[in-house]
Length: 144
Image 1 (cartoon, one colour):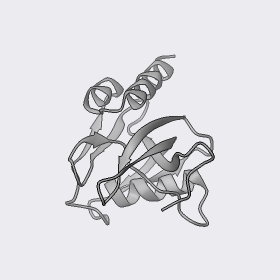
Image 2 (cartoon, rainbow, N blue to C red):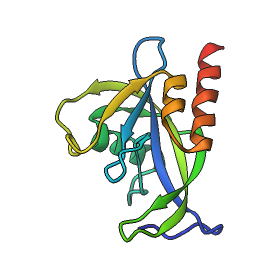
Image 3 (cartoon, helix red, strand yellow):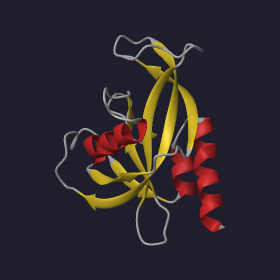
Image 4 (cartoon, helix red, strand yellow):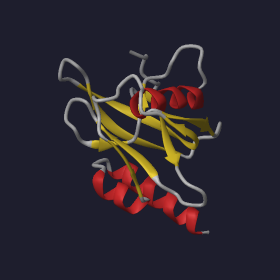
């Protein structure tokens, strides 16, 4: 597990995927423990830049292959529940991902539900207030 930042929060990497030509859809997955809806995310990976770690996470958790932008789309914070039941404050760096391929076979297949949704529907399903806000900002940017 990574060392906390100077503010005590642990950094995580995530992808917010775009699917379709000119259509913005958000990839949501369910968590393995509680089954709540969220975006693919994970701890930083040694020797990978944050956007590259986000590409790996979206592949492992949802079978999506693509290229993430190097610059973060945004951030959100939440309390990550660890395996021992303790929680740790985490900040998630979110990257926009251009989808190249969708695979039926991937490492965490069968462990999570996967759904492609409009930003509005995705915002309704996720619990984290800051992630809801990020999804709605994404929608506003797409409408420009």
